[in-house]
Image (cartoon, rainbow, N blue to C red):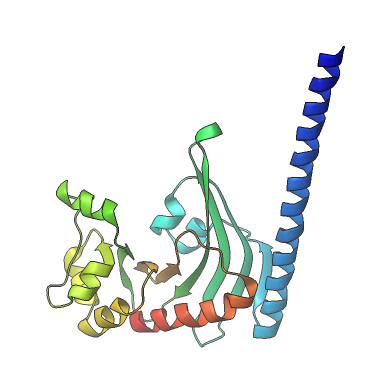
Length: 219
C-alpha cells in the first residue's frame, strides 16, 4: 500500500509540475502577444495573433519556411512603417519527432521589394559546418576583394552568376559590417532574422530599424 501511495504521489507531483509549466508558458505568451499588439497600435500597423496562412504560402519557398513541420506564425505585424511593405512575426517549426524532436523559434521580418526582383539566395553567418561542407562540395560564393564578408557570411544559391551580379560591392561591404544575420531572398521577398532568437517586445522597434536598413541595401 505504501508503494502505491508513493507512486500516486510521484504521478501527482509530475502532473502538478506539468500544469504549472504550461500555465507559466501560457501567461508569458499572453503577455508577449499583448505587448506586440500594443506595439502595432503605436506604429500604425495591423496585428494578427496568428497568421491566417503559412508563410511559405504567402511569401514563397524561402528556405526557412520549407524546413520541418508543425509550422506556426504568430504575433504578426503588417504594414509600411518606413515606406516599404513588411511583415514581422514570431515563427517556429519542429524537426524530428518524439524524444528526438526540436522546435526552432525566430522573430523574422519579410520585406516586399516592389521594383527589384531578387535571385534566390541564402546568406547566413559562416560556421565550422559550412567550412567542413566546402570540403565535400557544399559551395560558398565568395568575393575575393571582400575578404571580411567572405569570412563572416556563407552565401549560396542556384544561380551564382545572378547572385554575384546582384551583390554589388557596396552591398557586400555594408553587409560585412552587420554581423549575425540570416538573409534569404527570392523574387520580390526578402527575409531577415537572427537565428534562434525571439526578439523581446521592447526591442522590436530596434529590430525593425535594423532589418529595414539591411532591406534598403537590396532595394
